Length: 402
Ligand code: ASP
Ligand code: MG
Image (cartoon, protein in one colour):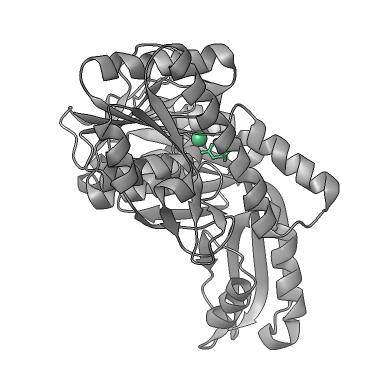
């Protein structure tokens, strides 16, 4: 078997943990398997590198940021290779250039396009454990790129797909995917299985366990993933196209606190209004999330939308700068709002799920500011202070507790 194992930052945070990773890999290797290991930077190293950069220059170039951040992963893989050596098992570390992991050219948020597998195959044929840097790639200019924060998961899934691995295991500091964040919901339960689509929604909506692009990629290439803890031998959660276990209506509740709601009041009610507004935001690279357009009256209408909290001021500025083109009466920005979402493939064939969600928020006396839905998701925007209450209420009403 060819097994791809990815370990996150906490799993390689210090000497003991690095040896722990090495031993876990050696167990598989000694069973006769080929083992490819993907590592993240140690502990909080990426954050520390970002701090160092900011200390030198408030607005560092993205190219140089990637040059800097890739050192984090390079440190981990080299140290891990030394640990394997000390344990008497042949291993070799490889970075994005040595493997050749080709990405798009945009620094700091590149996408993997193609991974060469010859070098890895060659090393595996020598019966070596191959340790590869996560998160990084190279672009057509011959520079380092990075895949965005948390991107090592995506490296692992992409490598598993390219190598047609028999298994892809993502080791982290939690023992799987839970029905809700266990720090918010005390009786949250670990899921044994989850579909790619559910996980994609949960990952995007703030579940924080996996990089959402890694889930997208797993779905696209049919890579069956397991998320499990590097510190215990617990089973973990399996991600796949369809799950066999008897389904609950809802698989999980996610929340995301870093949101802001922007309302543009008194826009003219005619074709092109929404286009001009969102085109201005898109041109400034501001991602918009939930969108609400009011019923038009007296030839005017209002549009409200949410953005990631950090982009609120930028969004307001873009709209103000375009005031003469957009012709609105009033602009409001509300920070301190949060999204709470319920996700579950089971809701597709069951009407009334959204109503039940709204009922439980009503019972908890929580005001809903905005709503958006998909086939397998209901998201509400509420006051940030009510997130804990809302997540627990939804978790309870849908019977997700242990
Ligand atoms: N080290 C990078 C980060 O902290 C990538 C990763 O951990 O996946 O974002
Ligand atoms: Mg991570």
